[in-house]
Image (cartoon, rainbow, N blue to C red; front, side):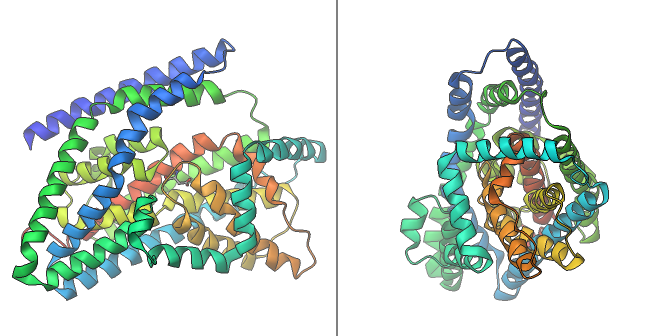
Length: 439
Ligand code: ASP
């Protein structure tokens, strides 16, 4: 344990140093007017994201199967499963409501001059059209609407052919298959034990690989963050968009520093601020990768070794959380959508705002734990509001309006991913009481 803590401290320091160095280098490159070459991005991808992503599916599968099989007894399993899902949905609802309240209160999109709005919309159309695949995905999401979004989530949870979906990278299919196998092995008792032991030793082996990869992260983070900072720079962001960013980032900070630690305490998980400090390595990884999935190996390792979470709870809660629990994304969806409606001068009723909060949670559940996923599922929220306001004869918001915030989305994505992952850790800590390691 002492060795682990010392190693974690060194790794955390290296990650911090790499982050600072990357921000400075990125700004210098941007200031020199040089567009960053793909070199930074690609190197970062190979050193940071790919090594982690490679391990995601095996870890999800092994850790959920071992977690489920070792919890012991159907009543404990039921409490762990239902408790986790309840805590995830409740925290996402709180996050989305907080985002909605903040954006309605500060209203950075209200009263923007028509010329500014037209200029923003011109830019939005260009941004929207720049990535044809993403634009297509958004159009598709618009076509299927809220009902389609539910169906999409359900068909991920109940795949026809889990193996096919797992091979294609669906973490949800891996979770379903692992839950079933874990339940089966637990029910088989003694006869299930050999298979379970094999799965457990495979998991030990994979976690060793995670330990090695952690040493690569600081270098990968340096390249990746340098690429982002050099590309975006901090100038030239239009004032209303800056207002939106400020509200989104302040909301995320409030949720992370106040709401989630209190949530942790209120549900018996102990001092949330301590937990947060102990897990800072996880947040640096989430921040630089913008991906809950890619961060997953680090989250599991750190929750167990530094967060004092039980292995049993962590192995179940964290993979499930990386897939379905996204507090940061729920908050962000509500903030963006209400901001865009403000910008386009649409007056929403209170019931529309409630609809935004609820559909933002749905859109967050539906978003995969990868960069920019929330940007695409936001279409679900806009479509839902559009169809209710259409009944009142109000012009719908064009989907291309999302382009207004695309330019700054990466930075917000980095921040919301941290909050997404932090929410998973809090629930793993709370659930460690329901599923302790020794009983
Ligand atoms: N990047 C986020 C995540 O991986 C998802 C999103 O785009 O909101 O958690």
